[in-house]
Image (tube, rainbow, N blue to C red; front, side):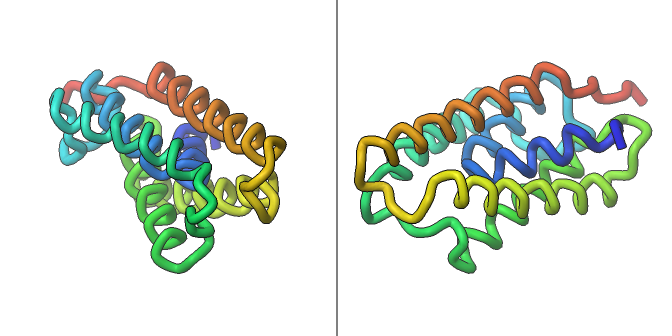
Length: 154
């Protein structure tokens, strides 16, 4: 299962903050730490996904922010988890299994993150929980990028 730990982790990040997972994947690809070549790794995609991640963190605290469990948002988190899970699966692991594990991580991150936040985002305590979720997502994403295996030189 250790071969798929990063797959579950990036899925979990996608469940917490979907664009943070995208940014992490772009940064990992730029360092040759993804199994796939199709994740954009140049300066522009890294900058755009990082900016989108920061914007998502700000927007998430707004009272009009939609629930992460609505079908379009939920589906996007699962899809990002699948792509990330395949991309970060260990060198000797199956990318298909990595995708499934990433989807499971996204499901867990979505539900755990929502439960930890509670039902509102209008009080100072709720803001603190949202900021804590940001720190967890960014910290886990950073750890995953740093620890992901290098792409094999085939």
